[in-house]
Length: 297
Picture 1 (cartoon, rainbow, N blue to C red):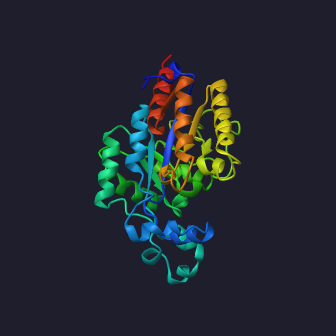
Picture 2: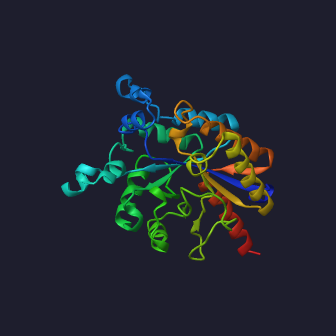
Picture 3: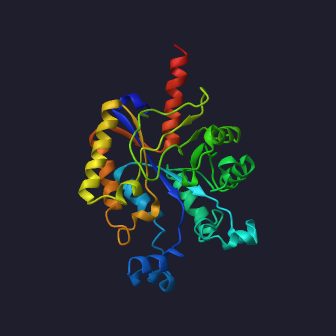
């Protein structure tokens, strides 16, 4: 990749929120709501349709790009929540069926990604947006399984408590956050560059596009592609930093047809338009070099 963002027309930051790696309660839910019993297959065969790390990394490697993987360390409903909260249906969705990032198999995945040039960052748990101690602990756990310090990440469900969340992030040693955005809407909303909420080296990468915000309501895959192309053209015209989020489980074309195809097409088109493409962490480093060079003039 280029050592300077100035060598390219715009930047495309690729990110992945690692929310779930196992298909648990979603299997009966989709079997009922979609009237498709095939969703139950993974419960009896041992298949792991949401485990898409190797497939996603292979795709990006073939395209010559790297991305950010944000790792979640969510609370346990039964160990960390009161019995009263066990009866709240929403809490079953939020806190059950998650994963332990220190599981040896996952540790191997995250280390392999990091050593292969991918960024492994923090996906702050659901209740952590205003809990500095929790965020610090999650960061320490993640850094305990990696070779390099964690420099940034994104809050689960894009949770933010105003600038206080960013104050917590900066206080625990994060250099950037990528939580500012929407899971139901997409677009630049006037933000073509990173935000510096404190006027210093801490930056915020606004989220331009989350896949389900586009595809969940798209009338067709081609219509969704035209929207992607429109956003790329807007990024090109404004020399923007465009950030996209594709959850790894959506790489499973059997369950989520079109998601992988659209992601690959987005990257190929950005390459053809001379975009810098990579993880937020690497983009941050390039931005810092540019800022430091400007301050010395």
